[in-house]
Length: 537
Image (tube, rainbow, N blue to C red):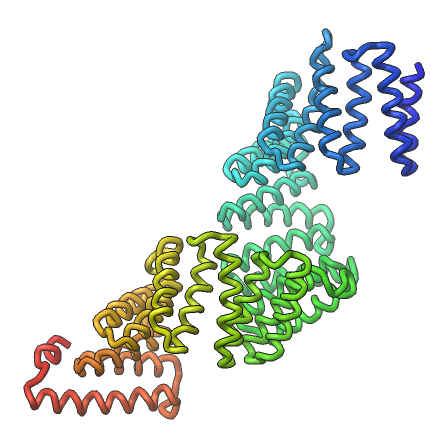
């Protein structure tokens, strides 16, 4: 009786915030019960389970696991098997294992629970759907997205049958399903799930409900990843309108959507609008979190990107430096976000001609990325490529070629030989070979770059013109004036297709080289030299 009274007193103390006294009461109750009833009485399991709940709420997960496991042991010993209590404990144990990232044990607990529920309650009971949903969450955390989708769909079908197609819980599962589809790269299925959730929430709550805004935010994320920037802007702006009305101008969710909207404006080339979004996000972040916050650093980094695009290089460096200081302070010197900022600072220093500062930043970024990501990651290739560009600018061609070779090897393996990034590195290698007067290798590199760029970007992209122009220079240097003339003319056509007038410096320069190549071609033909090359071209 004393143990029972103490067990009842403990939750009252906990409800009043007196957690230490509450847990002390539970422990005293447990001691009384063990002394009078023994270790295996069902009453022991009940107290253990309650203690587990409290440890879990306090973040004391190891203690919670011990309580739940002991409760489960006792519950399974009973002659009269109370499946409801066993299921309750298994689900609690599965949740804590999930919180501690012990996913294998979490999955095992939920599957045990599911088997009991299906046997006792039937295949389509609402509790079966809840456990399936929990399994979907854990499989998602494990990145086993196919199993997560299976569990969510089975849960969804049960809940639609039991609760109806417009129940809020059905919307919640569609949201979970959408997130998993997006993580596995199935954007169309993600959009379908999100739109179904949106339809349900609008039907139940109206167009301006805060939950509607949450789904619009998720849809905006998927649309931006798909490159549908116009519709992404529309979703984010509608989400922003609802969140501002419901939460106020300075809420963190308003800042989150505004930051994403800024990213979409950036990707679509609307840099002034993008900067405005980031500046407003920055002001909210400072008020909510203070200046030394990771989210504030993210916004400063994004502002640096926009200033860089606008050619406002000092402002860009100021933003990057502020972001770098915060990231180093909060995340440590070796964090990948630190490397990202250093890499971008290197780009700005290169653009302003500060090659030593650029190389210092790239080396810092490369050191972190190489250490954290290994030798086969595309971010390592990106920094290595840019280091090669600086070496090339400093006429250190052998070091530049070493960097480009490593970058190309990674990019071809990870992205495929026809990727635009591979074409960029091949083009750079062509420039180095040209500088080293290895003209055959230069042409090979340019041909590879040209094929990839035409495939990925089309025949009329400026990068195509750039490669054609540089190929023409190499052909001219080797006396193959027919080939040079052909490439100059192709480059000129692209410039004009891009809308450049005849007084544009690129057009003027190319026209001059065309005239030069034509003169050389006439002289060479008259002398009878290189006739085979002329005819072939």
